[in-house]
Length: 490
Ligand code: BG6
Image (cartoon, rainbow, N blue to C red; front, side, top):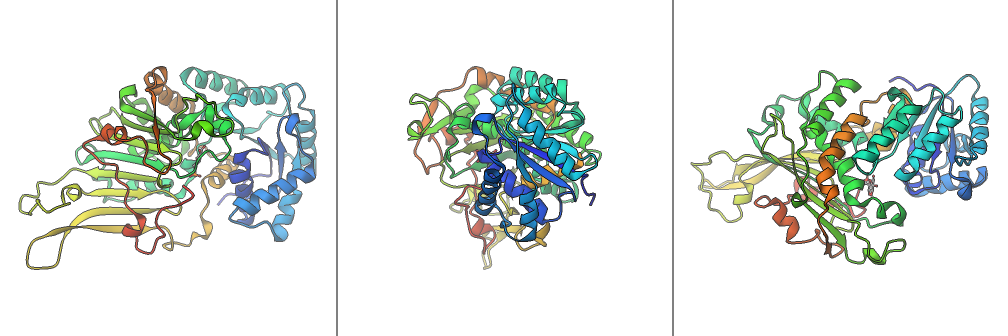
């Protein structure tokens, strides 16, 4: 594998939740895995009002890695990682400390390292940070990673694209959606396009419905400031779930290079039917309005379920059911493709509970480590021709050497250093998604309350996709020996 050139990585939002949970632990894991370049420096940045000293930033990184990292902060790799960390505050009117920190980091590496800026800041701050990079010489030949959600609607996404492209040309822009970096999401490409077994069935002739279900047990986790202005639709659906939908629904690209892959994915977004308010259920868990930082009359949704359609030759008439929410009964990340029923004329079909098993299903659990299962009918042993549900399953855990596996952010930060945009979202694709979301955003249905630990507002959620059920098999049933659902919601 190619090694990235030497880099100075600047983390905006260095003391925020994302940096703490994912970015600092992820960067350290890349160091442990030997995937960072020989020469690298990481500069943390925040506005001056939350600035910290270099020592405090190193201590902060240590805590973050110790709490959330897979690789623990000890030994020589940690020592050199810690030494690579520095801090430089930046405000649009005073970027001085950041400029000084970046120059010091570059000088310490010698030569001409590349710059990579990661904007782990709320969407409302993207514009001012980009503007500041453009006003100084920091943007130079640098690359920029921009977090989701990218804008809050079509108009703001367009403005943001213009703002970014005024400073960075498109080849240097990496709009990140960390679900696209997950091993098991990437594996959907392998499943579909490296096997002769699935793709011939992967269309409206054989598939009745597709479900992409990402319930979370997690609540707000102290992120009210971000979440109140975002909500489940913008935080999860318009971003992660629809990106996964793009991978599930796309046509085979001519290669996995960035352009053909993104062309095909973006064509799916272009074909999305406008999302009408009647096809959406918005929920809010009881107690949300009492969370610190949440308005007492907040109408931010913490749950969204949708029925969407991809209006193209392959998928016309096949409903895609999407669901995600906070404080739900389980934390799962599951795609189900429900296949059409064969006639089954010669088999008894009136056995209790059999109705729901008649159509085969392909189930992809893309929560780490992930598994794939085909649910089908088999004959029960005995003199009578009785059918019973059966499963063929592949589990990532224990199937391969997992040592080389990377988490979403790790993989994508590495790709950004390498300049590979394949798994990053593109301006036109995002604009198509916002365009399809416009009827819903213009006229959102009222929020409905739901009990924490439930499956969202009932009966609305079940009625939304009737006659289909929400299908969420217990992993322990599919893959005996797995631990069941993830309490952390990951
Ligand atoms: C983030 C959302 O992008 O994804 C969070 O902002 C969500 O609200 C998280 O909890 C889920 O990602 P993962 O990989 O931790 O399951």
